[in-house]
Structures are given as structure tokens and as C-alpha cells.
Image (spheres, helix red, strand yellow):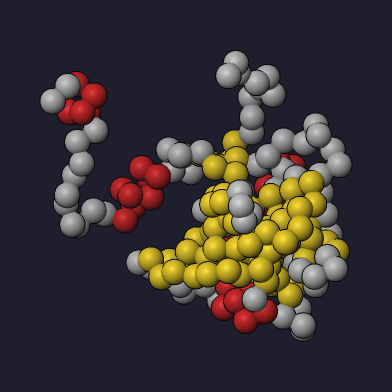
Length: 179
């Protein structure tokens, strides 16, 4: 076993502490999204950090949501949702949609897409999706969405809101590294 292998040896402890696991995964930087829907009565949404691309053909994305979520079952019933990728200036929106028991849309400017999914004004990117599949995975559900329409931002100077090591972060430099 070389030094690198020794540093990354798998631990097979079935009793991994959930706080330790969350802290470890916090070392993976990610963007912040709001997953949103409309049930015909009101807009619904929640902050989601676990968002990923899955397939280019067909265009599929995924997100993970706690099975105890009160928002996602209402979105699931509609069969569709929007992904709102937040900008560095939308940290307060991320915080608001992460709370329970409040009007998450209070003070948030948004509009309705033709599909009747909510679009948060000023988002870096909007994806209009339909639910393609869902899988139970521990205390979460993994939702696969088929992207039906892409609404990119008109402002290329916008930066994404990032989350790393338990804190919001911003890009330090917009300079691309060499390929």
C-alpha cells in the first residue's frame, strides 16, 4: 500500500456519526439552488445544496431532499419543478428557503414560467423540469428530473452562491485555469 492509499483507506465503521459525516462532506464546495413548484394554490420551495447533472442525452439532473421535507411532497404531486441557481447576492434567499414555518416567498421577487413553475428573479440559471424518477436513499430521496427548458441569465458577470465548510463563499477569481 502506498502513502496515498494509506491516507484514504476506507473506514467500515457502521456507526459513523452523522455530524462527522456532514462535516466531512462540507469539504466539498457546491452551488446553492432553490427547488420550486406551484400546487395551484401557492408557490412552494426549499433550499437545496445536493444538486447535480446526470445525463446530457436526455438532459437529466438530480437533487436530494430529506424524506421528512414538508415542501417536496407538494412539489411531487405536481410532477414538475424549477431549479433556481442562486447568485452570490442571493444569500438571504437561500437562508429564507432553508427555514421551516415561515412564508418562504415573502419579499422574494419571482414570476411564473409558462409551465407554472416559479422562477426567482435574478437567478443565475433557471431549469424547468419534470420529475422523471425518484429513489429512496436512507433518510433522503434522490429525485431525477428531465430538463424541459433552460433559462440562462442575461448577465454573464453574475457569480454563483457557493457553500463550503459550513459557510457561504464566493469565487475569488473569475480567471479560468488552463485546461
